[in-house]
Length: 149
Image (cartoon, rainbow, N blue to C red; front, side, top):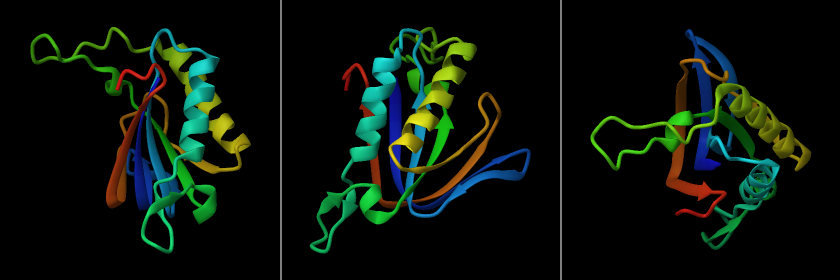
């Protein structure tokens, strides 16, 4: 399971021009689910996202987590995070989870983050979405549950 976490001042997601999710300060989390992912991968990633200390403290050091700044999460499913471009120029998505499994784990990730005390907005699984955000910093973090990078 892979996630791209962006620290944002605000963000929103639209489907067919309609805003379906919106947050103030917090994280945009782009989530890619692999075929082999398990509950263990989900739990690891949820705890990492929740505890990630990338907000500035009074001394302007990245030392505060999402809860410390009363931040929110906009969770977006993005299978293209698992695209492999090592051969040729057209990405291969063979590592991506089948849609049913990926959607289930995506919904479970939302629940896990909520259980950790966060307000979570979402996009629409499988839809073509427009994500608009103001990246604060910019700060962008990559996390892989298999620790491949």
